[in-house]
Length: 87
Image (cartoon, rainbow, N blue to C red; front, side, top):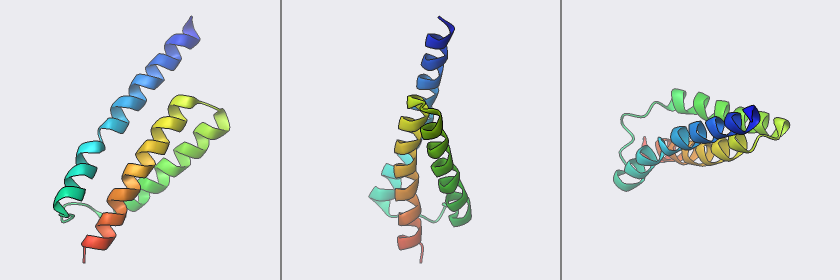
């Protein structure tokens, strides 16, 4: 029973933290305004998310894998827009 609850807690945490990036990615894509986005922070953050994804793969933990794969895609899109539109 403990394992089921552990997986559910991980899944809910994954959904919430991943969903938190959607509004920023959507706003940035829609407005092309990247003035408030730190290139350094998003570079380090995106690298960290990639490492979390690798960690999830090594553990075989689906909540970590799915959440970080989606978060990585969103963070990369924001980072690319920051580089492209931040000139």
